[in-house]
Image 1 (spheres, helix red, strand yellow):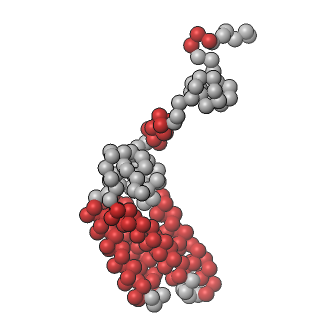
Image 2 (tube, rainbow, N blue to C red; image 1 turned 90 degrees about the vertical axis):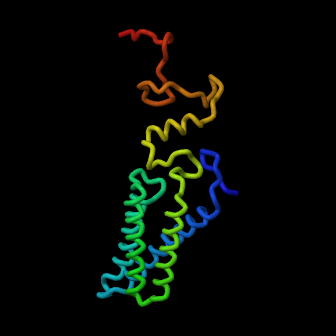
Image 3 (spheres, one colour; image 1 turned 180 degrees about the horizontal axis):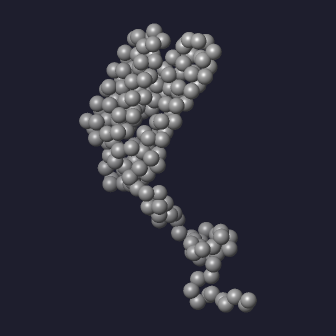
Amino acid sequence: MVQRPAGGERVRPVIVLNLALKFLLELGALVGLGCWGATVRPPAARPVLAMALPLTAATVWSVWAAPRSLKRLSRGPRTAVELSVFAAATAALLATGAHFVAAAFAVLVLINAAVANLGEYPASTPSSGTSRAEAPPERWLREREAQAPEAEPGTALARQPRASSCCTAHPLPSGSEKKANPV
């Protein structure tokens, strides 16, 4: 079943398949960088590079290219970051001697990028109307709160006012219920 975006449009299966391919390419990039790190000289650097290279690539991706990142770049710079990670992985595969794998990886990256840019993915994620990258966290939280189910007054799920209370277990009295502090 394909989820519908907020506008009611149907997400095309090509987009879903291309996003799945992109995820597999991301994993392949991490494997390629790790494999190259495990084959470098001197041998003492192998364990460090085999762990550090994929970790660095994953960190760069998660900060600037991940769909739910708070610092996600706009389309142009994000595509440059993604293609840089993929190019580094292709070069790493070439350096390990896996020429056919590197060529196949590069072709799949190019196909993925072409379909992504021709298909013009919607700016929003399929499950919500707005991605975190395009909405400030406060707006995103307000939208999430607005979607929360309403509860009967007096029940445990009833919403409490968000005045300067230290927690929801001890809400501040509102309006006419305020009592003078006997000091």
